[in-house]
Structure formats: structure tokens, C-alpha cells
Image (cartoon, one colour):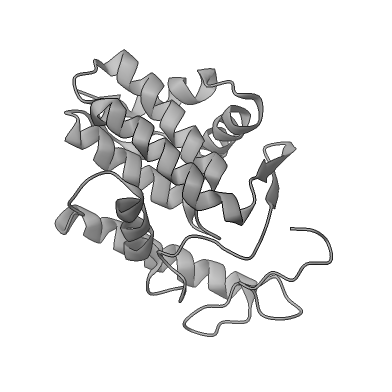
Length: 206
């Protein structure tokens, strides 16, 4: 977003995201969001999402995880323009919100053309999962919650293709998550998938 633009997702005069509990304290919101999302991710194992791996499934994944936190859960970000985050030692920029629908359509068309990664061995699967993870992260479909959504989505994608993706190996401890964020950010900003592919290789099982 440009410095003069107002973020429609936050309470006026703050950086706190508008939420269903009307929490106006950032630390309290962080705690509520983390606990709620964690519980909802666990429920996905009991009641998994079905259907084709497309934009609608990505949206449903986000809605299932954050639907009790934010009124816009499951909705593609809009009216926010460019987004940027300062993380992993450099600023990561995401495309303008008006480009999100078209970018998602192209990405999922490519995934469909690759037969949703069916028939790949572990090494090739790790590389292609890293590619699609980085592409979807670069699009940054949602205002918040993209990381958790992508972890759940790619785990489901891998399982449907005959592999098991165990994120507890790389996204449970804070240090591990920072390593994942750095690898992802390098992939997005520099097009270098080597670190991210290595992480997928570590968390992927047959």
C-alpha cells in the first residue's frame, strides 16, 4: 500500500485487523488468532476439505482456519493495492490486490496441467511443491493467514498425490518457522527455490 492509502482491513488509526471478537489489543488478538487457528487446523484432519485443488479450495482452507477470527476469512484480498512485509532481513513485496484473481487462475491452470503433481517421486515432488508454494505466496491471496493456509493446502496437495507432508518437522518451533519464512521469501524475491526445496524434501515422506 502507498503511505497515504488506508488499509480497509484495520481499525481506523491502528494496525490491528478488524476481527469478530472486536479485540483492539494486538497482543490479545495474536493470542486469540493463534489458538483459534491451531484448533481449526487440527479439525481439518478430522473433517478434511474435499474437491479439486483450485482457488475455491484455497479459499475454503483459509475460511476453515480463520473463519472464527476475521469476517473476511476465505475472501481474496481487495482494495489494498501492493503489500509489503519486512521479514527475513529484507522487504518482501506482494503484487497489487487487483492482480490476485488473474494470478491465481494462471497458477491453478498450470497446476492442473501438471496433473496436480500426481506420479512424481519424492525429489521431484519437493521441487514442484516448493515452486507452487512460492508462487501462491507471491500472490498473497489473503490479507492475513497466508502461511498457515499454504501449509495446510500443500499438505493436502501432497497427500492427494500419494505423499505425506509433515510440517511439524519444519514449522513447529519459532526458529524453524523463521527458516521457512526466509526460504520462502528468498524464493519470492529472488526466484531461488533451493532453500525452500530443501525444506520440502525434509518434511516430505512417501
